[in-house]
Length: 257
Image (cartoon, rainbow, N blue to C red; front, side, top):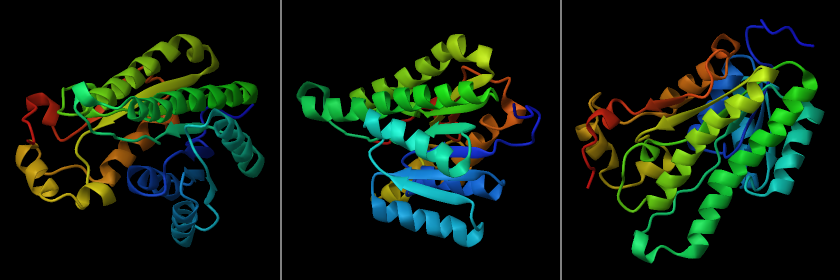
């Protein structure tokens, strides 16, 4: 059994981490001395991200490309992580998609694609990770990626907001089943964040700087730092919680439209 007062988990697995918030979480973990398994759907992005992290923190990161909505691949990913890195202490279900659309005309195919990745992918990653952590008898930490849209209504995001609110309920529910094994489960809910995708949207930074009380949207580093705390051993008594990281936007909720 590992010493539960070690200063940091040894091995972290992060899905959907080729770019954006997921990449920054992996980068943050590597900087803190963790060994990281980085997953992304795109093999090129996976390799590029791993190389970039290892250029700063040698031998800290490995990668495995694949579809985090595929339950068969999820099982393979967890087994690969343990085989390559020796254990699994932290699992971050970051992979997710946003499919905008009006409720009255929302496509069934879009709905199923979104739910399969955002919900099924997160649920079964947590299941596989928890099984491994229980087998290790060393505790662990699982984190879900929610959103402010799981707290506040947002135009054309009915399905997405529903999926994110569901992940916060999942974090609460798993407290009942995983706390006896010293596994804590939490969610974070980022607000507007400057990523490669949002930076390309015209007026995004200006709009969210204007309507966010702290005067700017988040950067991926803001999100990664919060994740780093919640999955650290210092935070293991925090479980079943959802942390909003939005510069105060949900306190006032002005529309960006």
